[in-house]
Length: 345
Image 1: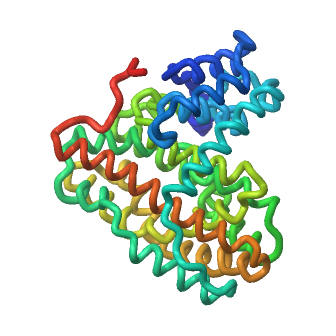
Image 2 (image 1 turned 90 degrees about the horizontal axis):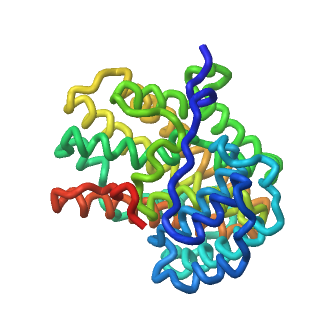
Protein backbone atom coordinates (compact mmCIF):
# COMPACT_ATOMS: atom_id res chain seq x y z
CA UNK A 1 0.00 0.00 0.00
CA UNK A 2 1.32 3.43 -0.88
CA UNK A 3 1.60 5.78 2.09
CA UNK A 4 -0.77 8.76 2.00
CA UNK A 5 2.08 10.79 3.47
CA UNK A 6 3.80 10.49 0.11
CA UNK A 7 0.85 10.93 -2.20
CA UNK A 8 -1.48 13.49 -0.61
CA UNK A 9 -1.04 17.04 -1.93
CA UNK A 10 0.22 19.31 0.83
CA UNK A 11 -1.31 22.77 1.11
CA UNK A 12 0.89 25.80 1.50
CA UNK A 13 0.37 27.63 4.80
CA UNK A 14 -1.06 31.13 4.65
CA UNK A 15 1.25 34.05 5.36
CA UNK A 16 1.14 35.60 8.82
CA UNK A 17 2.94 38.81 7.96
CA UNK A 18 5.05 40.52 5.29
CA UNK A 19 8.17 38.39 5.71
CA UNK A 20 6.33 35.07 5.54
CA UNK A 21 4.38 36.34 2.56
CA UNK A 22 7.58 37.31 0.72
CA UNK A 23 9.30 34.00 1.56
CA UNK A 24 6.24 32.03 0.47
CA UNK A 25 6.07 33.85 -2.86
CA UNK A 26 9.79 33.42 -3.47
CA UNK A 27 9.76 29.70 -2.66
CA UNK A 28 6.92 29.12 -5.12
CA UNK A 29 8.67 31.14 -7.83
CA UNK A 30 5.91 33.75 -7.84
CA UNK A 31 8.29 36.62 -7.11
CA UNK A 32 11.85 37.27 -5.95
CA UNK A 33 10.83 40.08 -3.61
CA UNK A 34 12.50 38.88 -0.41
CA UNK A 35 15.79 40.21 0.91
CA UNK A 36 17.98 40.16 3.97
CA UNK A 37 16.58 43.58 4.80
CA UNK A 38 13.09 42.04 5.02
CA UNK A 39 14.41 39.52 7.54
CA UNK A 40 16.28 42.13 9.55
CA UNK A 41 13.17 44.30 9.71
CA UNK A 42 11.00 41.38 10.89
CA UNK A 43 13.51 40.51 13.61
CA UNK A 44 13.74 44.14 14.74
CA UNK A 45 9.96 44.46 14.95
CA UNK A 46 9.40 41.19 16.87
CA UNK A 47 8.75 41.63 20.58
CA UNK A 48 9.54 37.93 21.19
CA UNK A 49 10.82 35.78 18.35
CA UNK A 50 9.51 32.59 19.96
CA UNK A 51 5.95 33.89 19.72
CA UNK A 52 6.26 35.91 16.52
CA UNK A 53 3.95 34.44 13.88
CA UNK A 54 5.63 36.09 10.91
CA UNK A 55 9.19 35.04 11.79
CA UNK A 56 8.29 31.49 12.81
CA UNK A 57 6.16 30.91 9.71
CA UNK A 58 8.95 32.22 7.48
CA UNK A 59 11.45 29.88 9.14
CA UNK A 60 9.02 26.98 8.88
CA UNK A 61 8.66 27.54 5.13
CA UNK A 62 12.42 27.80 4.63
CA UNK A 63 12.95 24.54 6.49
CA UNK A 64 10.07 22.89 4.62
CA UNK A 65 12.00 23.66 1.44
CA UNK A 66 15.01 21.74 2.78
CA UNK A 67 12.89 18.77 3.90
CA UNK A 68 10.77 18.72 0.75
CA UNK A 69 7.77 18.40 3.07
CA UNK A 70 5.56 20.81 1.08
CA UNK A 71 5.64 19.90 -2.63
CA UNK A 72 4.24 23.31 -3.57
CA UNK A 73 7.68 24.82 -2.89
CA UNK A 74 9.98 24.88 -5.93
CA UNK A 75 12.87 22.46 -5.24
CA UNK A 76 15.17 24.51 -7.47
CA UNK A 77 15.05 27.27 -4.86
CA UNK A 78 16.26 25.17 -1.93
CA UNK A 79 19.75 26.68 -2.19
CA UNK A 80 18.73 30.11 -3.49
CA UNK A 81 21.48 32.41 -2.12
CA UNK A 82 19.09 35.16 -1.03
CA UNK A 83 16.81 32.73 0.77
CA UNK A 84 19.79 31.10 2.51
CA UNK A 85 20.93 34.54 3.60
CA UNK A 86 17.44 35.32 4.92
CA UNK A 87 17.41 32.03 6.81
CA UNK A 88 20.79 32.88 8.29
CA UNK A 89 19.50 36.18 9.69
CA UNK A 90 16.45 34.51 11.22
CA UNK A 91 18.45 31.61 12.64
CA UNK A 92 21.02 33.90 14.26
CA UNK A 93 18.29 35.86 16.03
CA UNK A 94 16.32 32.71 16.93
CA UNK A 95 19.37 30.95 18.39
CA UNK A 96 20.37 34.06 20.33
CA UNK A 97 16.89 34.31 21.84
CA UNK A 98 16.92 30.65 22.84
CA UNK A 99 20.30 31.01 24.52
CA UNK A 100 18.98 34.03 26.40
CA UNK A 101 15.85 32.40 27.80
CA UNK A 102 16.67 28.69 28.18
CA UNK A 103 18.13 27.91 31.63
CA UNK A 104 21.34 25.92 31.19
CA UNK A 105 22.24 23.25 33.77
CA UNK A 106 25.63 22.88 35.37
CA UNK A 107 28.11 21.15 33.09
CA UNK A 108 28.95 17.53 33.99
CA UNK A 109 32.27 15.90 33.30
CA UNK A 110 32.51 14.82 29.64
CA UNK A 111 32.10 11.11 30.32
CA UNK A 112 29.37 8.67 29.39
CA UNK A 113 28.31 8.11 32.99
CA UNK A 114 28.41 11.76 34.07
CA UNK A 115 26.54 13.06 31.03
CA UNK A 116 23.96 10.27 31.27
CA UNK A 117 23.33 11.05 34.95
CA UNK A 118 23.14 14.79 34.26
CA UNK A 119 20.58 14.32 31.51
CA UNK A 120 18.40 12.03 33.62
CA UNK A 121 18.57 14.56 36.46
CA UNK A 122 17.66 17.38 34.08
CA UNK A 123 14.65 15.43 32.81
CA UNK A 124 13.57 14.41 36.32
CA UNK A 125 13.81 18.00 37.58
CA UNK A 126 11.70 19.37 34.73
CA UNK A 127 8.65 20.95 36.32
CA UNK A 128 6.89 22.05 33.15
CA UNK A 129 3.11 21.70 32.83
CA UNK A 130 1.86 18.16 32.22
CA UNK A 131 -0.25 18.13 29.11
CA UNK A 132 -0.27 14.34 29.24
CA UNK A 133 -1.83 14.21 32.72
CA UNK A 134 -4.51 16.67 31.65
CA UNK A 135 -5.32 14.64 28.54
CA UNK A 136 -5.45 11.44 30.60
CA UNK A 137 -7.90 12.81 33.16
CA UNK A 138 -9.78 15.86 31.93
CA UNK A 139 -9.52 16.59 28.21
CA UNK A 140 -12.71 16.87 26.19
CA UNK A 141 -13.09 15.37 22.70
CA UNK A 142 -12.51 18.83 21.18
CA UNK A 143 -9.35 19.29 23.22
CA UNK A 144 -8.10 15.88 22.10
CA UNK A 145 -8.68 17.01 18.52
CA UNK A 146 -6.62 20.15 19.20
CA UNK A 147 -3.88 17.98 20.68
CA UNK A 148 -3.62 16.04 17.43
CA UNK A 149 -3.49 19.23 15.38
CA UNK A 150 -0.75 20.70 17.57
CA UNK A 151 1.28 17.48 17.38
CA UNK A 152 0.87 17.01 13.63
CA UNK A 153 3.41 19.71 12.69
CA UNK A 154 6.27 17.59 14.01
CA UNK A 155 4.91 14.07 14.34
CA UNK A 156 3.89 13.60 10.71
CA UNK A 157 7.61 14.13 10.01
CA UNK A 158 8.79 12.39 13.17
CA UNK A 159 12.54 11.73 13.43
CA UNK A 160 13.46 13.72 10.32
CA UNK A 161 15.04 16.72 12.13
CA UNK A 162 17.34 14.43 14.13
CA UNK A 163 18.39 12.43 11.06
CA UNK A 164 20.38 15.40 9.76
CA UNK A 165 22.95 14.53 12.44
CA UNK A 166 23.75 11.05 11.10
CA UNK A 167 26.44 12.05 8.54
CA UNK A 168 27.93 14.52 11.05
CA UNK A 169 28.68 11.92 13.70
CA UNK A 170 31.19 9.10 13.85
CA UNK A 171 31.79 5.99 15.91
CA UNK A 172 29.57 5.07 18.82
CA UNK A 173 27.46 8.23 18.70
CA UNK A 174 26.64 7.58 15.05
CA UNK A 175 25.86 3.93 15.74
CA UNK A 176 23.57 4.90 18.62
CA UNK A 177 21.69 7.47 16.56
CA UNK A 178 21.20 5.05 13.67
CA UNK A 179 19.89 2.42 16.12
CA UNK A 180 17.30 4.87 17.44
CA UNK A 181 16.34 6.16 14.01
CA UNK A 182 15.98 2.65 12.62
CA UNK A 183 13.18 2.08 15.13
CA UNK A 184 11.66 5.48 14.35
CA UNK A 185 11.52 4.54 10.68
CA UNK A 186 9.91 1.18 11.29
CA UNK A 187 12.89 -1.17 11.30
CA UNK A 188 12.35 -1.96 7.63
CA UNK A 189 8.54 -2.17 7.88
CA UNK A 190 6.94 0.81 6.13
CA UNK A 191 3.66 0.42 7.98
CA UNK A 192 5.51 0.79 11.33
CA UNK A 193 7.27 4.06 10.49
CA UNK A 194 6.28 6.21 13.44
CA UNK A 195 5.12 9.10 11.28
CA UNK A 196 2.90 6.65 9.40
CA UNK A 197 1.45 5.23 12.62
CA UNK A 198 0.62 8.79 13.70
CA UNK A 199 -1.00 9.44 10.32
CA UNK A 200 -3.18 6.36 10.89
CA UNK A 201 -4.11 7.73 14.33
CA UNK A 202 -5.17 11.01 12.75
CA UNK A 203 -7.31 9.19 10.22
CA UNK A 204 -8.83 7.16 13.05
CA UNK A 205 -9.70 10.44 14.77
CA UNK A 206 -11.38 11.69 11.55
CA UNK A 207 -8.59 14.19 10.87
CA UNK A 208 -6.63 15.00 7.72
CA UNK A 209 -3.26 13.20 7.73
CA UNK A 210 -1.79 15.40 4.97
CA UNK A 211 1.39 17.03 6.15
CA UNK A 212 0.85 20.77 6.56
CA UNK A 213 -2.94 20.58 6.63
CA UNK A 214 -3.11 22.21 10.06
CA UNK A 215 -0.14 24.58 10.05
CA UNK A 216 -2.51 27.53 9.74
CA UNK A 217 -4.18 26.43 12.98
CA UNK A 218 -1.19 26.27 15.32
CA UNK A 219 0.41 29.20 17.17
CA UNK A 220 3.93 30.50 16.67
CA UNK A 221 5.30 28.67 19.72
CA UNK A 222 4.30 25.32 18.19
CA UNK A 223 6.14 26.25 14.99
CA UNK A 224 9.09 27.40 17.12
CA UNK A 225 9.39 23.94 18.69
CA UNK A 226 9.67 22.33 15.25
CA UNK A 227 11.88 25.11 13.90
CA UNK A 228 14.29 24.69 16.79
CA UNK A 229 14.78 21.02 15.90
CA UNK A 230 15.27 21.91 12.25
CA UNK A 231 17.81 24.63 13.06
CA UNK A 232 19.79 22.32 15.32
CA UNK A 233 19.71 19.52 12.76
CA UNK A 234 20.47 21.51 9.62
CA UNK A 235 23.44 23.43 11.01
CA UNK A 236 26.54 21.27 11.35
CA UNK A 237 27.98 23.52 14.05
CA UNK A 238 24.93 22.69 16.22
CA UNK A 239 25.28 18.91 16.03
CA UNK A 240 25.75 18.81 19.81
CA UNK A 241 22.46 20.62 20.30
CA UNK A 242 20.46 18.23 18.13
CA UNK A 243 21.98 15.27 19.98
CA UNK A 244 21.07 16.81 23.33
CA UNK A 245 17.59 17.58 22.04
CA UNK A 246 16.99 13.99 21.00
CA UNK A 247 18.26 12.69 24.33
CA UNK A 248 15.83 14.88 26.29
CA UNK A 249 13.03 14.15 23.84
CA UNK A 250 13.39 10.39 24.26
CA UNK A 251 13.86 10.61 28.03
CA UNK A 252 10.58 12.46 28.52
CA UNK A 253 8.44 10.44 26.12
CA UNK A 254 7.56 7.04 27.55
CA UNK A 255 5.38 8.02 30.54
CA UNK A 256 3.58 10.89 28.73
CA UNK A 257 2.70 8.59 25.86
CA UNK A 258 1.15 6.09 28.27
CA UNK A 259 -0.98 8.91 29.68
CA UNK A 260 -1.94 10.12 26.21
CA UNK A 261 -3.06 6.59 25.31
CA UNK A 262 -5.02 6.28 28.55
CA UNK A 263 -6.76 9.59 27.91
CA UNK A 264 -7.68 8.71 24.36
CA UNK A 265 -9.12 5.38 25.50
CA UNK A 266 -11.09 7.26 28.16
CA UNK A 267 -12.60 9.34 25.35
CA UNK A 268 -13.61 6.23 23.45
CA UNK A 269 -10.90 6.03 20.80
CA UNK A 270 -9.87 2.60 19.58
CA UNK A 271 -6.58 0.90 18.89
CA UNK A 272 -6.28 2.57 15.49
CA UNK A 273 -5.81 5.87 17.37
CA UNK A 274 -3.94 4.69 20.48
CA UNK A 275 -1.46 2.43 18.63
CA UNK A 276 0.99 5.28 18.04
CA UNK A 277 1.13 6.19 21.73
CA UNK A 278 1.24 2.58 22.94
CA UNK A 279 4.14 1.93 20.56
CA UNK A 280 6.16 4.72 22.18
CA UNK A 281 5.71 3.52 25.76
CA UNK A 282 8.06 0.58 25.25
CA UNK A 283 10.18 1.94 22.39
CA UNK A 284 11.13 5.17 24.12
CA UNK A 285 11.91 3.43 27.40
CA UNK A 286 14.67 1.65 25.45
CA UNK A 287 15.64 4.69 23.42
CA UNK A 288 16.18 6.91 26.47
CA UNK A 289 19.09 4.79 27.68
CA UNK A 290 20.71 4.69 24.25
CA UNK A 291 20.18 8.42 23.70
CA UNK A 292 21.43 9.56 27.10
CA UNK A 293 24.48 7.33 27.38
CA UNK A 294 25.62 5.95 24.03
CA UNK A 295 24.59 8.94 21.93
CA UNK A 296 24.93 12.05 24.11
CA UNK A 297 27.42 10.63 26.61
CA UNK A 298 29.48 8.96 23.90
CA UNK A 299 29.61 12.14 21.84
CA UNK A 300 30.62 14.23 24.87
CA UNK A 301 33.38 11.78 25.73
CA UNK A 302 34.70 11.76 22.17
CA UNK A 303 34.13 15.49 21.59
CA UNK A 304 34.28 17.37 24.93
CA UNK A 305 34.05 20.66 23.03
CA UNK A 306 30.44 19.77 22.16
CA UNK A 307 29.32 19.21 25.77
CA UNK A 308 27.92 22.75 26.30
CA UNK A 309 25.74 22.43 23.19
CA UNK A 310 24.61 18.92 24.17
CA UNK A 311 23.32 20.27 27.48
CA UNK A 312 21.88 23.38 25.79
CA UNK A 313 19.97 21.24 23.27
CA UNK A 314 18.54 19.06 26.03
CA UNK A 315 17.51 22.07 28.13
CA UNK A 316 16.01 23.81 25.10
CA UNK A 317 13.91 20.75 24.28
CA UNK A 318 12.42 20.68 27.76
CA UNK A 319 11.92 24.44 27.95
CA UNK A 320 10.30 25.05 24.56
CA UNK A 321 8.09 21.97 24.69
CA UNK A 322 7.10 23.12 28.17
CA UNK A 323 6.09 26.51 26.78
CA UNK A 324 4.00 24.81 24.11
CA UNK A 325 2.24 22.78 26.79
CA UNK A 326 1.78 25.88 28.93
CA UNK A 327 0.15 27.71 26.03
CA UNK A 328 -2.27 24.85 25.44
CA UNK A 329 -3.17 24.31 29.09
CA UNK A 330 -3.67 28.02 29.78
CA UNK A 331 -6.13 28.23 26.90
CA UNK A 332 -7.98 25.12 28.04
CA UNK A 333 -8.16 26.36 31.64
CA UNK A 334 -10.08 29.37 30.30
CA UNK A 335 -12.32 27.10 28.22
CA UNK A 336 -10.74 28.58 25.10
CA UNK A 337 -9.13 27.01 22.06
CA UNK A 338 -5.34 26.67 21.95
CA UNK A 339 -5.46 27.15 18.18
CA UNK A 340 -5.23 30.26 16.05
CA UNK A 341 -8.17 31.60 14.17
CA UNK A 342 -7.38 30.96 10.52
CA UNK A 343 -6.52 34.23 8.84
CA UNK A 344 -5.02 35.79 11.98
CA UNK A 345 -1.93 37.87 11.21
